[in-house]
Amino acid sequence: MSWLQKYIERWGEMITTYRVRSFLIALAFMVGVALLMRPSSSCLITPYTPLAIVDLELAFSPTRAQLVTHVWRQSECQSSFALSDTALDAAIINIIIDFAFLKTYTWFFIVLIFLSASGHKRQFTYALVYVALLAGLMDVIENIAMLIFIADPSDFTYGFAVPASIKFGLILLIILLVVGRSILRLVRFFF
Image (cartoon, rainbow, N blue to C red; front, side, top):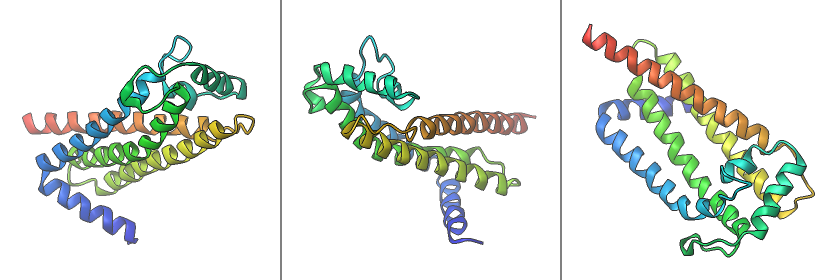
């Protein structure tokens, strides 16, 4: 058994022992960091970029990515809480805060994975935890690549669009499986 699996097992035991507390703490941290991101994120919403940072994350072409950053460079940030003058500065702040957010949402997903588990499928639960960790890793790669691109827009790689797509796919998979497992637990409980 690897050190990581032992570590995950120990955290899983703690999460299942303190179910409500684990859920509330993970939720509070995730929502707290998301609220910190909100002022900078609001500066990124323009008619051309209605999805804020996601418009850059999923820019698969150099032209699209450069256009997004150009729009942000020209847009003034109206939120005094964003600590930036332009939307592009707000994007950098948003990405930096996202390094904390990805830790909190990964932790929240891990808590949900353990809380939705029914004791007899431990290996599947551990596999889902690895999927959540992989989603967080894809977010780290995406954030670093976006910061590099913002610093030098001529240096476009698919370094943020591909990991972002993988991350969103993994998050969707986790949500669907956690919801499915939770429904099965409820059905077993009542029947």
